[in-house]
Image (cartoon, rainbow, N blue to C red; front, side):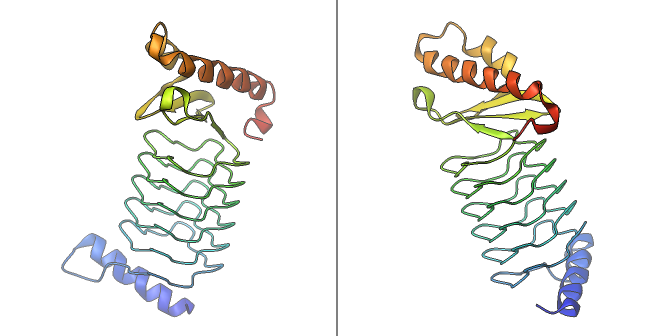
Length: 209
């Protein structure tokens, strides 16, 4: 997509966000946005389904409620991006940089996060069911203890866990699941994550390596 075309779409989208009777929502379905500079762009509620954003710079972009399902974000820079409740179902996020990104309540089911950097990202309420977390930095896949998908990550330097639909700090999780005979596997998963968290706390510069 030409730079002038993208600029017009973004301008129309800004007008639409300000007044739904003005401008036009950004519809970039299947758009070729490889290497695009979208630093700080306001793409709230934008339609980016199946868009090719390979190597795109989306650092500090506002992608709240954006639809990025099945989009290609391989090697994209999403540092500090706001992806609150964004739809990333099936998205290709291999090696994407998501450091300090806000992924609160984001839909990442089936997404490929192989080798992605999620150091310092907020994954509170994020749906990571069937997401590929192989080699992901900043997140530890804890498998399916007692049949519930579990992941651990670091939020503001503290270890947090999500088991099934419950998100809480590691200490809160220990208190909540302790003594429940049907959650013994969950407690073992928390033990493992606590050990990993302790190791990474010793080397804060590489806490998510």
